[in-house]
Length: 104
Image (tube, helix red, strand yellow):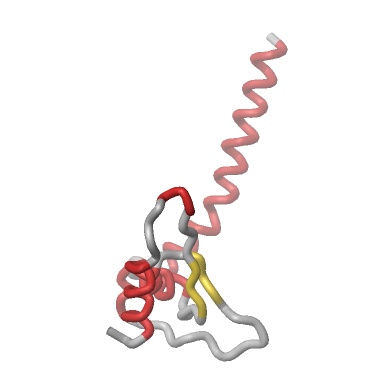
């Protein structure tokens, strides 16, 4: 009986916590009017101003535009993890990064 009571209390606390965490997101979505994806496509963010620190992202260059629209600012640096054991070169990554950098 004690174990059942502990499970019920833990489950109730978890559900309460999830509801409390979801409420702010619900309000943001209701205030937005149109879906975030539609707002993101409508505007293309400008690069971040030159701060004392570099603003960067750790994502493939193919997803930088999508990420920048979601955040509202374009990063100044882009990084990507490539495992040495994969034995793949970074040629595709470098080519896409150069294409994005040149505005193509």
